[in-house]
Amino acid sequence: MKPGYKQTEVGVIPEEWEVRPLSLVAEIRGGIAKNSNVEPADPISVHYLRVANVQDGYLDLAEMSKIQLSRHDLNRYRVLPGDVLMNEGGDLDKLGRGAIWNGEFNPCVNQNHVFVVRCKSVLLPEYLNVWTATKSSRRFFLFAGKQTTNLASISKSSLGELPVAVPALPEQRAIAAALSDVDALLGGLERLIAKKRDLKQAAIQQLLTGQTRLPGFSGEWEEKRLGDVGIFLKGSGVRKDEAQSGGLPCVRYGEIYTHHNDYIKQFNSWISVEVAASATRLKQGDLLFAGSGETKEEIGKCVAFVNNCEAYAGGDTVILRPAGANSMFMGYYCNTAPINAQKASKGQGDAVVHISAAALSSIMVILPSLPEQTAIATVLSDMDAELAALEARRDKTRALKQAMMQELLTGRIRLL
Image (tube, rainbow, N blue to C red):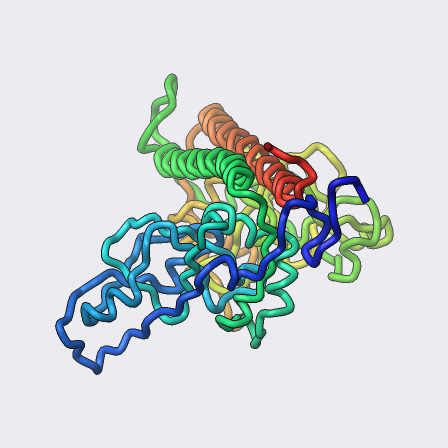
């Protein structure tokens, strides 16, 4: 063991750090149940923090309830700035994750299924809030949480047994500040990604309907049946147990719903030469429609195969091989609301919905010239590329935060 460190129940930590149960370094308070049948004496209307408001490390205060209670109970259950809020129950992997109350609504009380953890002088709320996300804390909640079918819960007494590694206050403050800076960066990236997604949706709405025209383009769009755009083929073969049988890329119909949007960026199934012999080989530019689905609203989701490689389509896919159309444009266009509505009207079945090549062939489309299709597809794919770059940066930042937590909250890296 490295000199200056010791082995504890939470792992190896610096010798001067202490491990304390949460109940010794904080006061854990329950909440009040909402009882509409009892008229409180000397009533006052206050905001009411519910389980739905306390998320995984943050608060969602978009919808705040109110409750009538007596002024005496207000003093007993009031939530104060700096309190750490923890849900009594929820998903096991998120159980016990804290969120700090900063006094956004005043006065405010907490629901009986939300614990208020009020830190004592030796523990900072900001530090406790990040400590609950450590591997040590997650292991504790994994074993201390009482699990039902889909959810888990923890009692006040069990929560009080959570072991907390407690450095000196200046070091707690430095650790929390460093991780807060990363959280701020993550928050900024999330907001930017959301903004870019909104801009893309607006561009799809404007460009794919002709409401907005790109510079240099004019003239009427042409109405035709989807069957006039090209010829339809069927995918074939590839059972679930054959999806990882080799090295040839393949698209299975279920993956169109779960892994692909508008056009194929990467493959998830790889089949053997033997399996490929009974599958349908794709040609660059093909459009793939999911031929089966759970609801009429989602039936016939479309993705374009723009890759220049050998690849195959499995069963329950309907393939359109277009002629004189930009396949990437068509991938975006065939997932717009007007086209989805037509596909939904042609879906057959209840428990499992199907759509045939004949049904897809009869769908009416309104298309610009090929050069305008290509220009629109370029704009939208550039927006996709920008979004992908931002999402990759966000994911790297999340990984960096996890690495920082592992180093800082075990004392492997000291900030003071």
